[in-house]
Amino acid sequence: MPEGDTVWRAARDLNTALAGRTLTRCDIRVPKFATTDFTGQTVDDVVSRGKHLLIRVGGEDGWILHSHLKMEGLWHVYRTGEKWRRPAFKARCVLEAGDVQAVGFELGFLRVLPRREEADAVGYLGPDLLGADWDADEALRRLRAEPERPIGLALLDQRIMAGLGNVYRCELCFLAGVHPLTPVGQVPDLPRIVELSKRLLEANKNRSRRITTGAMGRDQLWVYNREKRGCLRCGTKVAHELLGDDELSLRDLYYCPHCQPLRA
Ligand SMILES: [Zn+2]
Image 1: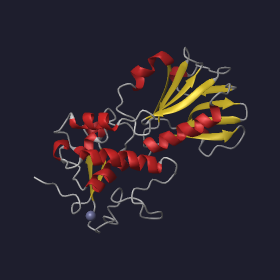
Image 2: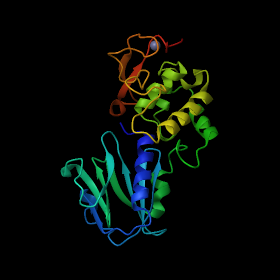
Image 3: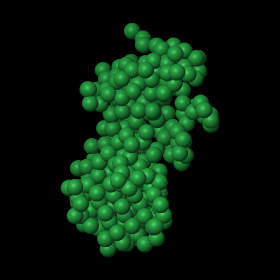
Image 4: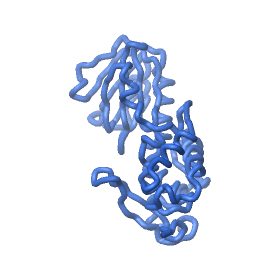
């Protein structure tokens, strides 16, 4: 599942492939932007903001291709003419610059907006865990602003910290020893959770398999998706529920009832 580390890596690879190069093909397969064509324009850079990916084209007065991977999306970089590793009908965007090609598959959303509207598009996000401007104190301040909110929901809120997804929210609650429904105001050591969030994303940003346990191989996560195998630390059956702010935002939640008891 794409989280901030996945998106950071995609942005890095796309930036390496496209930055400073002139587009020789631009095929946006989203009805609203099907006629948008950046052929002949230069890609300035490609950056991630939390889980959002921004491809900036055409300079200060230019445009942004703004995408979000949601659940299934991914970007691939190919040599032009190389066979794609995903079916063509799943492609939403093809950008070619001479001998390299970037293809976005199953993007959760893709839109084009003027560069000057970048702040409107991603300015609401909290400090970006993998951003050059990461600010732990500001993240902590935003986290503390809603003390009644369950920590398991606050960690997914991109306005508080940008970059965490469902795997990390489960693993962070485990590492902190807190039940995901614990109100933020009752979590014993919030600065440590913020610090751990940063450390986990940094540790994983350069690798394709996400590891929170320090172990390679089969046991890379403590509780996420381990309902059949049990908690990696104590073996207790891992609880699996759904948790979200509303019906639409429900996500799988995993926790160990023994290691993460709900305290009164
Ligand atoms: Zn346990």
